[in-house]
Structures are given as structure tokens and as C-alpha cells.
Image (tube, helix red, strand yellow):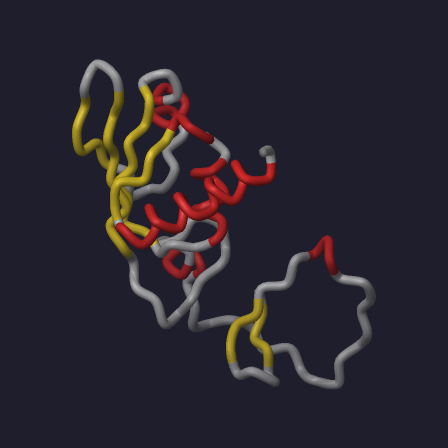
Length: 135
């Protein structure tokens, strides 16, 4: 993470994608303004859209994978909303980003997005696209 003078904003650079480094003529400015623990508090991963707020995300999780998610929560805001013999419903308060979606897709059919409707529809569209690849 660093301040990008061209865009006048923070930039997140993936170290494994840096091809070369050159010396800068700019002077180093130490961060004294941003608490990165707070900065990343509302996201899974590191992709943050400063213009978006957090959303309530409700997820239904099969009882078979619940022990994994219970022992390693998806996010610090994770709360149990409902428990039955077959599934556990949790709620997260997060910004919806690519890393959240990738994490949820990693559990495949063991999770179901309940809310928000836009995220549920996105998962439906992506799932149908994946399914069509195997026809």
C-alpha cells in the first residue's frame, strides 16, 4: 500500500506482479494518517472501494462445512442469525468485493447467499455461466 501521487489516492500493489523497480526522485513520506487495521476492517481481502458502504450479507451454510467456518470466521463481523439441524445462517457486515465472492465460491454448493438480493443474483448468474461451460 502506498500513496499514488498521480491519482492522489492509496494504491495497492501486488508484490508478485512487480516487474521492475526504479529509484524515485520523490521523497519518502511516512504514513501518519491511516490506521490500516481500521482501513481494512470492513472487507475480506484488500480490495476497497472508498465510495461504497458496507452491506448486510446473509449466508446459509450447510452443517457439514459449518465447523470450518465457525473455527475460522469469514469476517470479524460474523454473527449467527439462525441455526437448524441442516444449516446455519450467518450475517456479515462487509463491503462486497471480489475477495468476498471468491471466498464464498470456494465453498461451492455448501453456501447459499440469501441477502443482499443483488449479490444473490450475481451468484446465480455466475453459477449458470459455470454450469453452461460443462454442457
